[in-house]
Every structure is written in C-alpha cells, then in structure tokens.
Length: 87
Image (cartoon, rainbow, N blue to C red; front, side, top):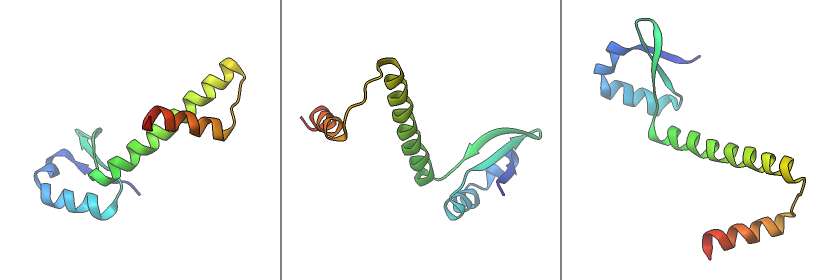
C-alpha cells in the first residue's frame, strides 16, 4: 500500500525522512487532493536511477538490433565496453 501524505505534512521533515528510510518506498505528496510530489530516500533514488539506466540500455540495444538485424556475441560486447570505459 503506497504512503500518501498531504503537502502540509512536509513541515515534519525529520518524521518524513525517517519514514522514507524505514519504508524504502516512495512517499506520495498530495496538494488539494491531487498528486503533486514524490519523496524518497537517496538510496532508493539511486536504485531507481540504476534500474532506469539498465532499462534504457536494453531499449537502445533492442532498437539497434531492429535497425541492423545484427547480434554480437558477449565477448565482443564486453571487449568493446572495456575498451570504451577503461581504455
């Protein structure tokens, strides 16, 4: 069940911080009964960002494959990545 709080509760910053770290899930903040903000711990944000980068890489790879129809083996892919990022 998602945590939903009204925007006026943002005054309790310590309480919200504790809740965000304890639950490790987004806290949805409403304004006038409508969704307005999402608050989460930095750790949870990093997880979301990492998952998003992975999802984006998969989407790009699928699009590239659709265009070229070419697949490369894992060793070639890892060699190219190592060269790109580690010289």
